[in-house]
Image (tube, rainbow, N blue to C red; front, side, top):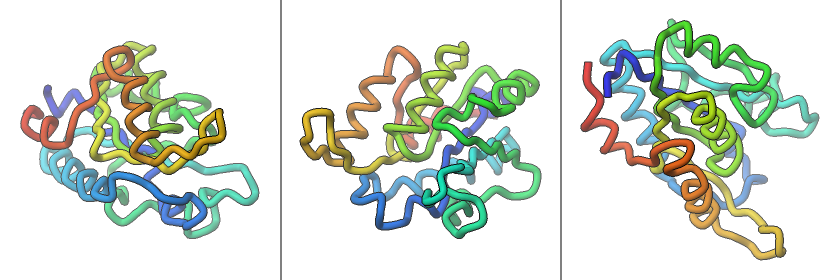
Length: 186
């Protein structure tokens, strides 16, 4: 995997998800793994795109103009890194993301972020359908507890595992941070 041809795509890593209203989450080390990946990409001067969710819902923790819309410290963009604003769950809908990726000539994506059962899953599905070689980093992504269709509470670990199972092998390859760090090259 060539870092210069692989975009690190960070999805919705904003302070909004720190709000207690989201409930219990999994992968408490996810932000540390995100920071490790960011450090590697920045060291190599490889392409990085941050996706920021700008919710249009009045009571959303992601709504612009409030603290929740700000990036988490571990995932804060620096000068020169592209930020793509989105209003839906998929980072490809109504944004310039696909055009940016095509213009950069990057056939591969390494995806991290939140929520693995929502925006991450929607974006990874589209990336795979659009023909990008996509890697989803399981331990650098997370989600929250959720009530299933039958009214049963599913833990964030269960929800995360199901999202990974839905995606792996069809839309992406699910990997760990260490796997990426060992394989990415100049």
